[in-house]
Length: 85
Image 1 (tube, rainbow, N blue to C red):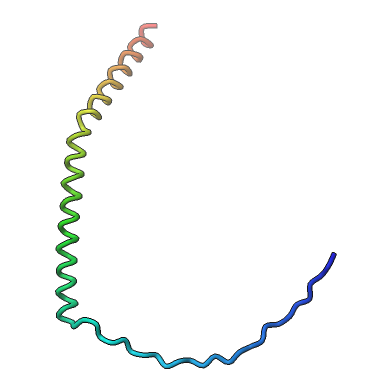
Image 2 (cartoon, helix red, strand yellow):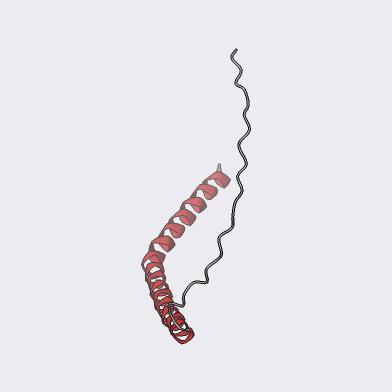
């Protein structure tokens, strides 16, 4: 079995660069206006999602009711047959 020798890494002196303050891209007033616009977009999207969920529920609920009624009917038939036997 060949054994590898260990070597230590050389330490380096790290010099911290001065942190530069980022330049202002938009003013506080523009920032607040941007937040308001984004909030309006968010509200619009959430309302559209709610509308879609309501439509989905209305479309699917008759099929779910039909399936529940079918399973209930079959269960009652099987349990009635089991009692008579």
